[in-house]
Image (cartoon, rainbow, N blue to C red; front, side, top):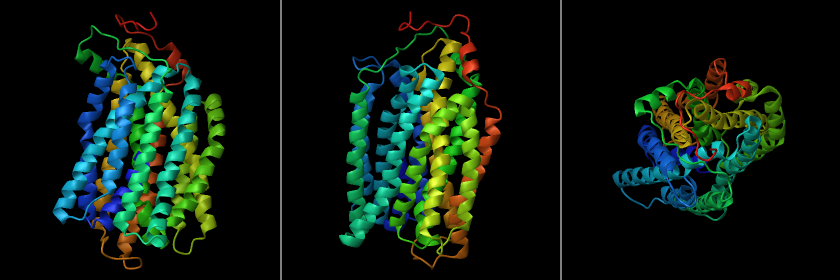
Length: 437
């Protein structure tokens, strides 16, 4: 929810409600995410070294969960201020949100590698995560715009008030979900930090030598950049290209959710038969075809076709999400087998950084592209230039298509499968894991 709501609604909110110029709005969002260049790796090291009766990771799920929910409310509850004061306020709140999300997300991403060891068992565990990701994404991408439409059109609230209420409701749901993960993992298996005699330089060389992880980072960067582009363009596309109410996002969201959840068992089964790389290849090809179909959309498109596209994109998106999610614990385990070091937090920090970098780059690139192509935040439906509408279409269709094609190229070099993971040996002199000693 927190990831999707930021990227679906934030740029649109800054530009059309707060009247911040698109390039400046994108730059502010990008700056807040590049700030995580420093905080994510630091948080990874902190969680690796933490000692508590709740384990290395879980304390941060509780504190980060409360802070994330509060910051979600504050980012959309913007008081009436001057343009300069508004810019300063949203920048400060973005930094607060970025810090809170880092505190929660980095330890959270590190935990799966500690909880489950089997290669296919990780895919099964991640399928549960994909299930709940689908639910959270549905609320962010579909229920949120329906809620905004209800608050504005039926209750007569101003846009600012409606977004503040949306932020409050979303913040409460986010905190509830995140704090529940703290209580729900109280009996989960834990590992402990392994002290190493290696220098930091030697450890860095081993990290760079983890080829599957480097390729995983490229896969994550390209995939998330494509997703970020289409999410950031979503509201613009509905309003200015399709010339429809934002509430129709609910039709797409329901169809997308049905496609995701309905296909999830099939993708899990295919992962067991063909491996995680295979499902990423199949799903990326599907996503290329379905993303290209946006080029045929417009004001005259029927809601049936709009919903059908959502259903098909949900099927492809589920395979992409499951494959990528299940790969991260594998590359963490591969590092442990090669080095004997428990560095899940460090790897989670780098993965989280790539996630935010993708959305950071997309925000400034898309904001700048819209400005360059002549998008005017003061013009309404039917008043934007042809070049501005084309820019929205590029972000919605062509950029994601190019990113999925790039993933296919990267996947040609990825070779970490179950056999290679099992055969990975320990480096000479590697430390032992006290939990298994």
